[in-house]
Length: 252
Image 1: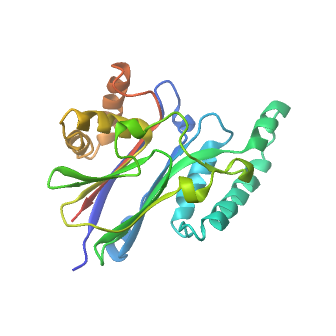
Image 2: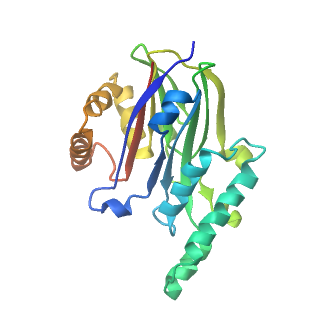
């Protein structure tokens, strides 16, 4: 039996920034892909604020995950090819000398991709950095990846870099999950780091924080409610002020 899935997603800029300053990017399938394709891909990438054109880098990473191989054997060639696209895009932009110097260092981003095989009822995932996948079954967390607790977060997560001079060792920094089972009724959450940290905090206090996300994203016009909720969490210092991205995937 082939499973089905549905999803909701949202990505918002940190409080005080415009929509155009959001450096996160998201990949979700089209409605036609959901209807006919047995293999579905989702991804989140969080561009590093300190680097140049990190939005363009995170956007290329998620879009290329759809058609390019991210397995460890092919990853160096894939990242090099995506880097070349980023360089072509950014080299055409006229910049002052100081911005040009910064551009030479390149851009950096964390990344989390998940591939669902609805026919085989399995999924695989690839990650670098601290965007996190949560798998919920029967209202209990059964898996998180690659972060497993709030203690795993740090100030210097591993990143994909456009400049190979700054790229970390893929063997050490890129994590993989393969052949994990999915069932009808499962909830999969892909969350950028600030939201993932909040989820782990609530989990450590015995709560089931995915319930509030499910409620917030349940209705058709959920963007305003979710944005207001995030603003209040940041204002109350329950969540760090950062770009926030989340994808909720319901397996049916």
